[in-house]
Image (cartoon, rainbow, N blue to C red):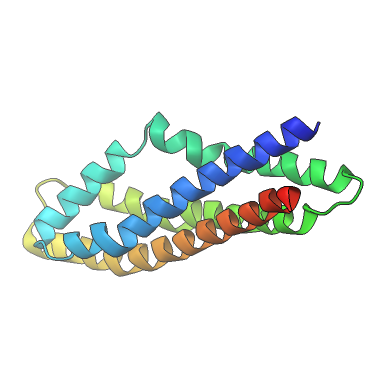
Length: 163
């Protein structure tokens, strides 16, 4: 059981770290770079990014940590000393919150942007961008922070075994 416990923490930490890095990269590089483009280019670029990101390289590290964190929390709760229970539970809550932010905030914004007609006029593109950009950036930053927090908690849980 200890091997399964540690493996679930390591894989969850890797996924959390990858997601924190991805969303942070969007926060400090991708979105500020795209902000310099005109509305048409911005909308088209985000639509292409949103379409391209749905692949195994994203989905595995995004989806896999959640069930593994539940497993790790159960294993931590049944551990004799329960030493890792607090950081694992905190990681689960933070990762779950980030997952919800993605599903409830960012994905609906992506979906709305995808529905903008390809031949939209300048006014339609401006309205679509205005409805999307500020909110998406804000919620992306929130999920970057939440994933980073989950990653930190998982490191604490893992290093607790080594100390």
